[in-house]
Length: 193
Image (cartoon, rainbow, N blue to C red; front, side):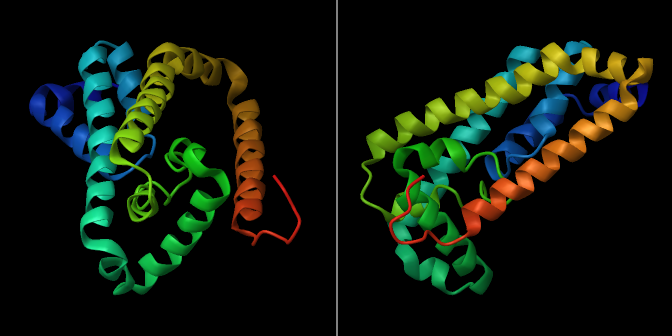
């Protein structure tokens, strides 16, 4: 932790700028780690939360705008993006407005998550309210989780919970994989979720 503290002291405000950019583009674990670092006092937890929320919210607003402004043609020129969009559109059709809360979490979905919403008929006012609520919940879970539970997790691992943590992680990854497989399967006629 001492090395991280020295890096934060050396780069100062740039750390918050990088956190903002990361949160605008991705939904990985960096906000969780930033919450943990804030718990140690190396970062201001309120600034971490504000930057995480702003990045998460504004990144999706930009993606919504790009899809609404430039349409599907912009995305059809990229094969990988086409495949990702097909999955995202299926999820948007299946889950409706709840999709805006769901796409923030699975790896790879956040990058394109707001694009199918922008291509659809949802009004911007409705999207921005759902997006803000979703980003706030995401920020609370990650930054708050890192801040509140970071030291507890670190102490549990140090006191011998390391093996249990690994087993819990394996279980979580297995459940995530099974859930992702379920989401990726095409919907069968007559089935409901």
